[in-house]
Image (cartoon, rainbow, N blue to C red; front, side, top):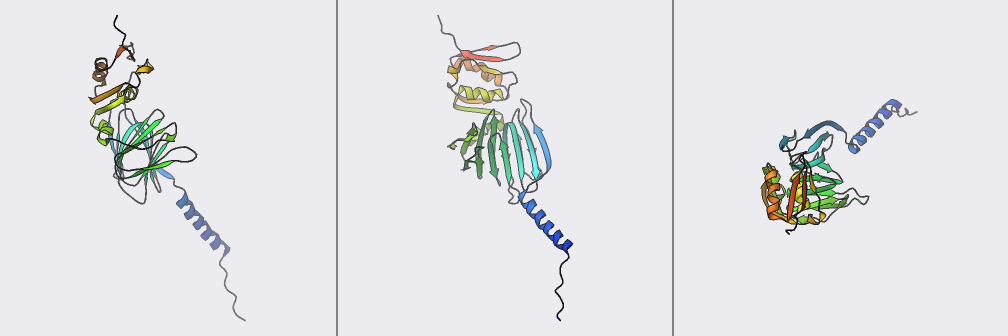
Length: 249
């Protein structure tokens, strides 16, 4: 009679199955093994060199968490503005989450601004994809020189911008080109601790243009009444009120 075919021990089969499941799990899940916290105070700018060779430049009053995962590199920009110069690696793609926006990239130079509920992504070099947080999961691929916003969790259409102006903050400059006053004041607020309050909504869309030093925004604020029909008043705690200039009698 022929010898019976030897059977593999049940324990060996179970161990093999466990290894397969473990491998599949690691391929699907992407656990974090190290996190780092970074923040800047008002008036501070900080360059952070990450362990993979990438660089993250944080603007004034910004906060970010860097997480190193098994299969990816992730940054959570809680608030503020950051410029990313990402080293390219196919093994661990780079991702930035900011509010309702998610930016995915392999290697590139781009900036992310997270102010209140609005997120703005500007691409200087390379390519990135930006997703919003809607159920449909809208996505857009940017090319260099484009900028896209996510407002109220909804992805807007990309526009062409001057990238030098968009990242001028890294050189301590604010560049406005017919920028609505409300938006300009929101940017200025990033470099000033006491609040800036726009008391008259009718002033919100007044355009402002020019190149200014963000290390001394008080000079810029004091200049506003000479170029726009508005007046300024300051409370004891430094809160600045912006109102329409009273008509001359």
